[in-house]
Length: 91
Image (cartoon, rainbow, N blue to C red; front, side):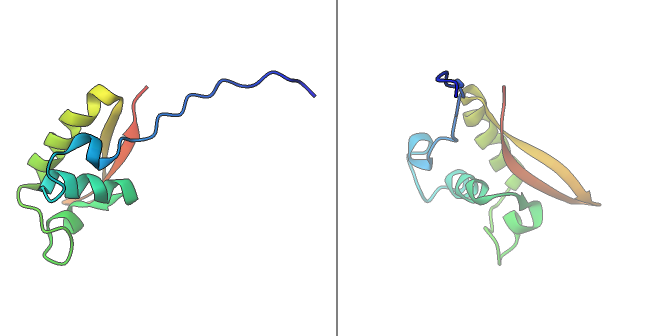
């Protein structure tokens, strides 16, 4: 057995507390939801979901905070007018 260890870099996403002063802000609520997994624009904007106003602006704001930390929000088109967003590490 080889005693060498593989050097793996693990860069977990930052906690919401590290990024946002107000835990009830729309940006923080969106980020907390993204930490759970992918979310659609329908879920973000619907009354039954996060019910965030101007969700595209919220995504822009959170991306701006995350990019210097080597994280981003990836968008994937699911259907006409329906997109899924998820956190992704940037190398």
